[in-house]
Image 1 (cartoon, one colour):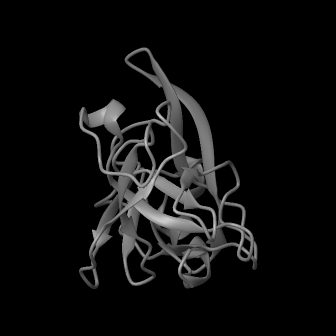
Image 2 (cartoon, rainbow, N blue to C red):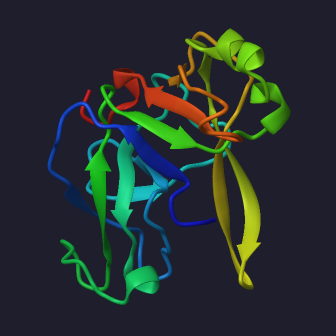
Image 3 (cartoon, one colour):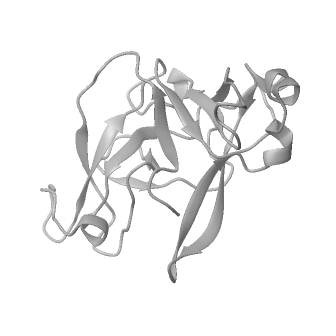
Length: 175
């Protein structure tokens, strides 16, 4: 759990953000975290471990600013007592910079290049920052044809310990 688990590396087009409802007042989300969306609702939910399966997992996008617990303000929501969260919608033309689950899998340029174009999943890890428990989101290295997180080219010398990813449009809640 940290602000900026996913950061925009290359922005192909500028799109407006949207505010989604959360599951209630105990929902805590930080800017930079990926956020899942149940279809046919206006409610977002946490991304779970091994997230990114095409046809079953859907992303609303990446959180721009967190819920009230993070930033101390209440976004307007559609229901009383429910907080909102501002999300940059999923866009398969955007490349994001994230942390890998295994730094050794992407440690050298040759290892990294061997993964470019591969489809992987988002992994979650329970972590604690300054005594606050939360979830860290990382990019795995197990590949699969039905996975929707794609490894993109990156200079590992310029971005050590990072991985560049794009999301297949099939993961979009609006696809």
